[in-house]
Each structure stands twice: as C-alpha cells, then as structure tokens.
Length: 618
Image 1 (cartoon, rainbow, N blue to C red):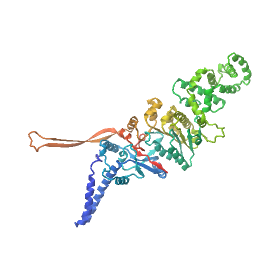
Image 2: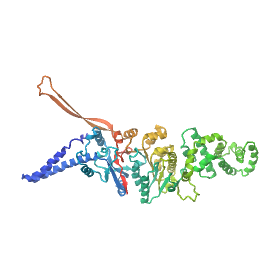
Image 3: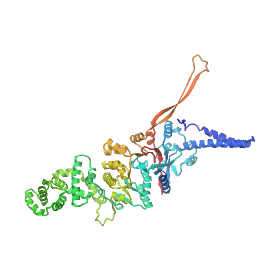
C-alpha cells in the first residue's frame, strides 16, 4: 500500500531551500577548490527542494480560497470540440477525477479545527495577501465572495483538467440535483450551448422559472449557429409561438389521458377520462381535430351537437339514406316524453335499427351512453376537470395552446413537438410558475406527455432516430406517468433527458409514492450533484458513489517509573500505527459543503469527478 502523506505537517523543505540557497551563494565566494562545481550541485538540490516547496504552497493556497471561473464562448466551443474529437464527450468545466487519495485528504481536513487549515497568515497585510492569492489563482478566475461552501474541496487537487461528460453515457439520462442558487441553471447553460452547436442535436428546454439569462444564452447561441429559436412563454403571448400539446398521439385515448392526469386520482378522474375520451373519438369520427378548446366546449355544453353530427354521418354510411323519413315516426314516440327532440328520435332510431342488432359503431355507442347519462351526475363528475380546462383553453393561453389555423389575424407561428424535432429547431418553454403555478404544472405535464408520444412514434417508425436532448428544470413540476415512460423507454428513440431537482422529497411529494420516486431516479444513470441542503438526497448520492478505505494514524506514548527506582530513572515508549477504516468515497459533509457552481459527478459504472462550472462570457 502507498505510504501515507501528511499534507499538513510543518514545511521542513523550506528550511532545506534556505540552506541550499545559502550554499549556492557562499561556495563560489569561499575560495574552496571546485567551489563552483559544488555550487552547481547545491543549485540542483535547491531546484529539487524548491519544487517540493512550490507544490506544498500551491496545495495550501488552493485549499484556502474559493474561486469562480469565467470562460469566453470561443474558448468553450474550442475546448468542447477537442473533447468531442478525443473522448466523444462534452465539456463540463474544470476539475479532477475523485479517488481514494482525495477522500483521505478530505477526512484529514475534517478532523482538523478550521483554524488549523493552512492558508495565508493573519499577519500578512491584506494587499499582500490579495497579490499572493492572485499569484496562485487558477486561470480566468476570481474570488467567490459568497459565504456558502468550503474552499478546500476543489483545492485538494492542484492539477485540474477538462471534465468530460461522455455522449455515450447520456442515453441513460442525467439527474442534476442542487439547492436554490447552487448553480443548476449555469450547468444547463454550459450543456445547452454545446448541444446547440452540434447540428445533429435537437434541444427542447422546459423551464418553470423562465430564467432570463438562460433564455438569452439559448437565443444568442441559436443566432450564432443560424438555428431556429422557438420561444413559448405563457406570461408574454406576443413574444411567443403557438404550440399544440395535443397534436401528436398514436391512440385517441392518449388525448383524454393527458387531460385526466391533471386531476387527482380517484373515481371522478376515471369518469372524467371516460367522458372526455368519448368526446375525442366523436370529434375524430366526424372529421374534426380535437384540441383543448373543443374538449372544453363539449365538457361544458354536453355532446348533443357532436352526437347529432355523428349520427347524420353514420346513417348514410350504414345504408340508411332515408333516415329522416324513418325518424319522423320516432318523433311521436319520443314526443310523449317532455322535451323530446329530433336528436332523441335519431338516437331511438339508431338503437332500434343498429345498436340493438349488433350493427352499431363503438364511437357512437359511447356518445349515446353519455347522452343518456344522468345530467346532474355528469355535471358533478366533469366539474372537477372544468377549472383546469378553462385555464388552459380560454383567453390568451387558449390561443397559444389550441391555435386556430384559420385565424389569419394571428401571425404567430404554429408548432408542435414533432415539427420541432423534424426541423431540428431549438424550443425554449418558459412556464412562469412563480405567478401561475397551477397552470404552469398543467402545461408542463401536457408537454412532457406530448414529448413521450413523439418518442414512441420515433421508436416505432424511424429507422435512424434523431438525437433529442430534453432539459427539464424542476422536474417535480411536470412528473406524470408519461414522464416515467419517457425516462424508461425513450433511449431507443434517441432521447437524452437532463432532469433537475432540489431534493428527492420533491419527487416523492409529487408522485405520492417512494417507490415511484425511486423509479424516476433509477432511470437516471448519471448524477450531477451541486450543493444540497437535503441530507437525504446527499446520502442517496453518497451511497451511489460507493465506499473506499482510508488510513488513520494512531500514535500512543507512555512513561513509567518504578517505586524503588532512582528519581532520574524512568521508562517510556512511543508507537505509531496505521489503521484502515471503511468510509464513503464522498462523505455527505462534502456534498452539503460544496461552494456555488461546484459539483460531484458520477457516470454510470464509470469514474467520479469533482468539478467547477464556468460562467460563460461573450
């Protein structure tokens, strides 16, 4: 086993440097034979010891100051291109591979009082201290004034490299965890910039907070590359495109499912799904395209109009061209009931001539069942779905989510997820969750469901699937069963999902089940963890990384004297032993003590890195 290195012992090499330096000066002047040659030997030893002192000083200065790093966009793209060519990876800041050596140093530091951690002595003037800090600072860095985090975490390794995030690993999806202000959005900026500059990748961003700097960075990089930038923002309709979240589906029931999943689980949700599903299939039968506005209309006003149109279409197709003549006698039958109408007669004709003889149509059967359903009971059931439908399908939000293709006064472009992917555009969705969280969550859920539907179609029908990067900030805002399916099965469709969250409890609270929360996290094979305040999430990541062994030095001493011995006689012993201790490779204290923009990253089945995200300039 490698020898134990104490990085915090007195710097004995500095005394040797002083001695060899003095010898280099004195020997040539002493007149000693061959003094010049001896001075050269001393100079060589001075260089050896000086290198050791330099390494020790660099280490000690590295653990004493927190730094933030800036990077010009040109440098970022150049570094990214080099990493792509050499390792098929994107650039994720600078750092180092975290090993047992760094775990050992971390435990050594955590055992020390904070006042004993080496740094610039207090007696050094402030101006001189700043110059010393700048001399040892990493390239393109400036001190981090924020109080959060421990400076020594990244300073344990003086030699930093470009941290690679391998493209082949991204198909397993990536979880990004971090508390508010730790740097999740800046991490997304670095990743999104590189995705935009790869012409084969499609980028879709769902941002509940609608971060202005992130959006502007995305727009700027699209302009730089000549790619189409699409912006959807609920709060500013005039700046937004129109986006239909019900455009893509393989089974009509998917449309009803996307709406029903916005409701709380229970019998009302199941009945609402049933009624909406019947209306959607009725629209398709008569040749209409279902959207949020039409679904709201039939939910509020009933399906009488839709059933009337469906029957008028069905009768001629079923060979009953003179159905109006046969419906006239039926009017007398239904007229005996209060409020009997032509539609009642048409339904009666359909039941007598077709449904009761096994010649009906399942779509019309469903509409007829809804038509006959108790009105009061229907109203109570559908009432639970109406508030959300009204928020999504009316006003400016309705025009943005249920666009009217024949409204020539509205010149905003109409897009859907499949069209975005087909044209390799970049879509940024700002949900404005701070001011309208209920609607934002509903929109996010429907959009992720649309993405899942497109992923399923790509998987089933595309020979060569496109590369789609989906970035979701605060994934708890849009977690549904469709999101679980997206994480579980979208890899074969070429989708790479980045999902950011603050803590595991956010996911569990949204899903209502610890098992489903673990299912979500289990489908994210890569983890990037910034500073966490939630120790449960930190422990989860620490266990993911695994354990290692560190050395503990145990020193014991004893002294004794016999009762009959001379006053000066005594015996004593000093012993030192190294003991191995099994510990987490990354202790929880380090995860909760990370400075802003610093992270630990675990690639599934691969290396573990500690790194720092740069701030993009330009």
